[in-house]
Structures are given as C-alpha cells and as structure tokens.
Image 1 (cartoon, rainbow, N blue to C red):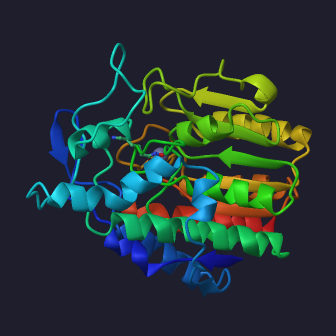
Image 2 (cartoon, rainbow, N blue to C red):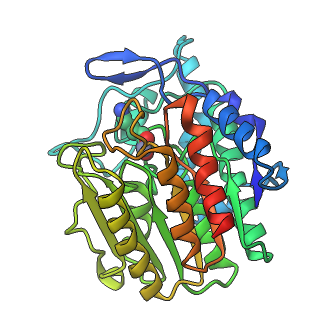
Length: 343
Ligand SMILES: NCCCCCC(=O)NO
Ligand SMILES: [Zn+2]
C-alpha cells in the first residue's frame, strides 16, 4: 500500500489550544506523523512517496474562495498587528449576531472562519495544510490509477473543516477534497467512512445535500463530546442527500463489540449505496489510551477495523485524521493498514 507523506507538516506546530479555560499544549503535534511513518516503514507496507502539488483548484471544489484567501493571508494580517505568537480566535458569530459578511479585522476573521479555538495559525500553517491536501489528492490519484488502496499521511487533519470554517485542529478537509477529486475524475458514487473518535462535522456539511457521496460516521455521542453541535443520529441528509448521511453516535466507554456492530452497520449502508470508491477518515483516537477521547478500543481491534473495511472490496483511500496517544499511534494506524492489506 502506497503512503503519501510530506515533511511540510512540520511547518505547522501550534504552541497551544484553548481548552477548559486555559491554553494547553497542542495534542495535534508533529511527532504523531513521525510515529506513523516509522510504523508504516517498519512493516514494509509499501513505498512512501512525496505528494504532487495540485494547486488551488481542487481546494476550491470544496472550500469557499474567501475562506482560502483567509487561510493564505491570516498569518500576515496577524503579524501586522505586532503579534508574534500563534493566531487564535476569541469571538464568534453565534446566535443573534451577523454571519452574512466577514469582518475586516483579523480578530473578526479568525472567529468568522472558525468553529472553535483549537485551530492555531502559525507562520507555516498555510504551507502545511496545502501539503496535507496534496497528500490526499496524490493518494486519490493513485487509487484512481489502479492501486487497491493508498494511505495519505495527512497532517494537519481535516474532517472538522467545513466549506468555510476551520476547527478541531482542521483547516482544509483533506478527505472531502479527495472525494471531490474522485468525483471530478468520473467516479459516480463515492462513500466516506469516518472512524475517528470525533464526528466529522465538516465532511458531513460538505456533502450533506448530495446523493453522489455517502457519509457514514461512528463517533463519540455529541451530546457529551466534541464537536457537540453535529453528529446526531437524526442528521440523515437534506434535499437530494436525504438518506445519504449516517451518524452512529456511541457512548463513552464503548468497546470492541459495540464498535464492531456499528462498523458492520456503516459498512452495510456503504455497500447498499453502491459506492465505487471509498475514502476512510482514519482517526485512531478511539484507542483506550487516547488522552482526549473516551472509547475503549485496544490495538488489536484496529486490525479488525482494517479487515472489515477490506471486506467492502472497494478501491480505498485512507486519510489520516486524529489520534493523540503518540506512543501508540504508529501501532494503531499500522494495524488498520495491515488488517486491510491482509483482508
Ligand atoms: N479540544 C478540541 C477537540 C478537537 C478534536 C480533534 C479531533 O481529534 N478530531 O477528530
Ligand atoms: Zn478525533
């Protein structure tokens, strides 16, 4: 299985995120990728290649142009204030406030184009997120070119990023950008399986009113878990997309048996959708040892996830999302990929 990886991810390393009333060190750190890369390499899963640069056009197929302009210029506007630390939002257009236009000031733009304060912008963030999207696009091209599967070792992750907003460590929705590239290359029906511990609210939003892309997500119950305001079972799609969105929220403490049952439900729905290609938003923060999550999967369970995905028999692109138990992330991601490869 081909792995696509860019060293440019190192250009993004937030100093902190605002969480529970204080700035805490970023759980989404460069070491995550190094651990996964070491595992993929040690297991001999396949070649590791650099991404091909795809430019802005594929990004615009998913994200609003003004949002991309914001991401490209945010750091310069921030430092023009005399700031030297990370840019972080502190005001948002919540209820009763206007969200029909972006403010002129960077402090207003940071809130307008985000859903939370877990998205530090640094000097290298724009370069890093473009490279991350290029990893996903290069992986999609490999799968479209005949590879049974590919692994886009994306960092920063993307599944919380919607068409016009960043959030939850995510800036560009790598998985959605890959899906849209597959659709633009002529794949009529694509499915997304999001196995990250957190609901992929951004991916859901991007495809919510579409029947050509089926979105299935298994995640911590948003009644008690980030992103809190999306991911409920009654979100089934809108317009032409009704019935093409499947949320399977699970309670804190969920273990392998309940998770496996939900995965079977999601896979059956994906098979019924008649997808010709599959993109897996691969978060491994469902791991029992994850510092910010509350499921109870053990490392061998990830092998079973990979095997279950393989049973779908679809050309598959794995896109790296979350997972913050840095000492175990390599084992857990490698187990998914190896379980798939042997499946
Ligand atoms: N404190 C914000 C929590 C962000 C969740 C990041 C993640 O792993 N999403 O999948
Ligand atoms: Zn997550």
